[in-house]
Image 1 (cartoon, rainbow, N blue to C red):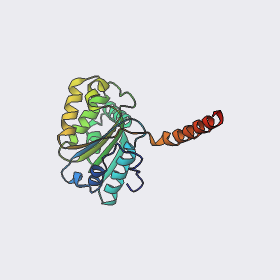
Image 2 (tube, one colour; image 1 turned 120 degrees about the horizontal axis):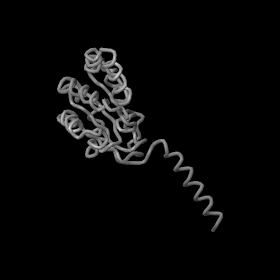
Image 3 (cartoon, rainbow, N blue to C red; image 1 turned 180 degrees about the horizontal axis):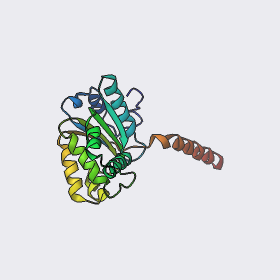
Image 4 (cartoon, rainbow, N blue to C red; image 1 turned 90 degrees about the horizontal axis):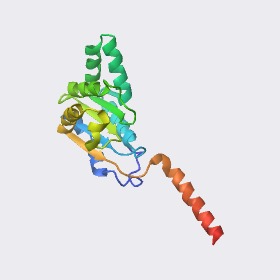
Length: 188
């Protein structure tokens, strides 16, 4: 958490993030949703919270939405569905990264819903996504599953919308600005 540059990312509610860093949200099985475009720090913040939870002695598991869907699909084919659900229900904190970046397979949204449902009111989930909440029905292709998932996720949740510049592209932008100034200085 100490490495996160709040000054470079003015779209982050620093007070909310610092409150989340106390890990009180784990005590009442609340969830955290980080919503925003690529490169704004959603994964970095979720990993920092996960690391803090591990340091505090909690079981934490990190996965991407695509990996979760693939593991659930494979478990269903192999007759290990219940074991898979127990696995994802086990950690005190489950971090599901990059929801919406890759299309989920047809049964992926259903599997994700079932994992969220297994954890509902029992343990916390952090989810990072580039898909705004209003657009989940379209992203999942099933309005009913999206609504049910959001109902459980948002019931007790902190939603951190991050709308700012990409960390990864910041260096490139600084380079482009310097080049532009250099070219303009030579032209003048």
